[in-house]
Length: 447
Image 1: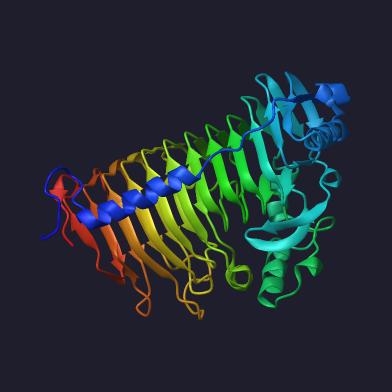
Image 2 (image 1 turned 180 degrees about the vertical axis):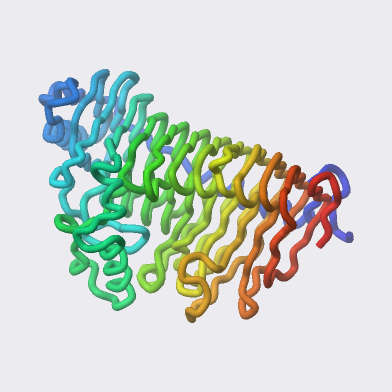
C-alpha cells in the first residue's frame, strides 16, 4: 500500500509511526519518580515493635508526621513484622519497607477511618484504603519487603457475599447515588456496610512512586492512583487472588508508568479506568498517558484491561514488551464497556508482547459488559493497534462485539501470529479492521 514501510513485520504508515513514537517519547520523558531528602525516620524509634502482634499504627503515623514536618525523607520499616491499621502518607515521605520487613494490616475495619475515596470508580465516604494519601506531593512506597493485607474469606473477601444488607446491595446503592447526583459527603458507608477498601490509593496526588514491594491478600483492588499525576509503579510483585483483586488500576490519572511488575491476581492484572457512569461524567477527567512495559501477567481476567469504568475517557495507552501466560488468564488485551458507561477510548497500542496461553481471546473488545446495550451513552473505541504479538494457545484470536448503532472502528492488527486457536474470530459490528501480515494457525488472516 502507498505510504507503508516494506521492511520487517511491522508495516505502519511512516507518519503514524512518527507521531506515536514522539507521543511515547514525550510521555516517557515527563514521567519522573520523586526524589527524597536524605533523612531516615525508623518506626521503631517511635515505638513500633516488629513482633507481628503489637499494634504499630500510632508509631508509624508519628514517624510519617515527623518526616513530613522535617521536609521529607525516608520512613523506615526495618526487618520484622509490624501489625498496623491504615497508613496515611504525607508529602515528602518515602515509606520504605526493608528486606525482611512486613507491614501486616489488621482485618479489623475499625482500624480504617472514613475517608473520601472510591468504590469501583464511584466516589464515596468509606473505610480508608490500607495505604492512603489525599492531596499530597512527592510520596513513595518502596523497598523489597511485603505488604500483607491478610484478606481472606473469613474477613474482607467474605464481604463480597455479605448478607447484612444483601449481597451487592451496598454496591447498587452507591451506583444509584451516583446516578442521582447525591453529594459525595452524603454517600457514607463504612460500619454496617460491605464496601471493601482498596489496598494502596493515592488520591489527587502528584509525583508518586511505588517500587519493589510485594503485595498480597488485598481486600479489593491493589494499587489505585486516582486523579493523580506523574505516577511510577516499578518492579512490584502482586499475588492476590481474592474477588475484585485487580493488580494496578490507574484512574482519571495522567502520566503513569507501570514497569517490570509481576501480576498474579483474582481479577484484571492491570485495569485502566476513568469513573463510572454519571458519576464519572460528573468528574469528567480522562486517564491520559499510560505506559505498561516489561511486565509479567499470570492469572487474571485480563492482562491489560481498559474499563469497564471508562465514562471519563481513556487515551494514549502504550503496552509493550510484556509476557502473559496462564490457563487462568482469560484475555491478553481487554477493552470492556457498555452504553451506560459511554466514554471515548482511543489511541491504544499493544505491541511486542508474547502470550503463552489465555483461556479466551488474545484481543477482546466488548460493548456488552454488564448492563450491555440500551443506555443512551454509546461507547467509542477507535485507533487500536496490535503489533508484533504472538500467542501459543487461545480460544479466539480476536473477539470484538460492537453495536450496530456504534460500531468498533479503527482497529489494526499487524505482524501478529496466533497459534492453536480453537475457534473462529468473533467480529460483530466492527468497521475498518485492518489485518496486515498476520497468521492464525499458520495461515494468513484476511480482513
